[in-house]
Length: 143
Image (cartoon, rainbow, N blue to C red; front, side, top):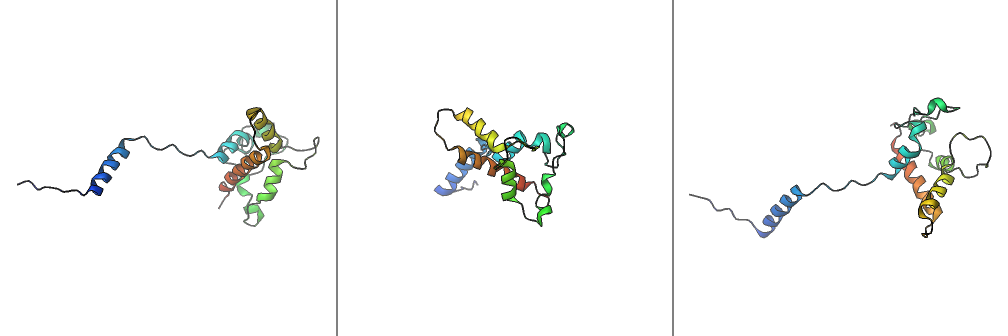
């Protein structure tokens, strides 16, 4: 004797949805903008891990710092404001001793070339790129 299985409309809809989801491609992963900025602009000197062991280290006058120890060397607090100023390069003389590029200026030039005649807020764009980068560096901190 066969048993009859009854499904409620809700259970049947859930079964159909789960079958459809099983056949659909996985959702696209969100872009990690901070990681992308780091890998594009920082990893060549600081290394992919941020420990200061990038492939260009031998070409530099001074070794880049280990970015994973910034919080540890600052009583456990990530030095966001100080790091923002260093990376952005605000107040840096046009000619002077600075080993790291002035990324704020580099971002402004790069963004201007990309957007050309499209209206955009250059300061907001530079700030968002820098904050995404610094948030990623914060994630690299030794715990």
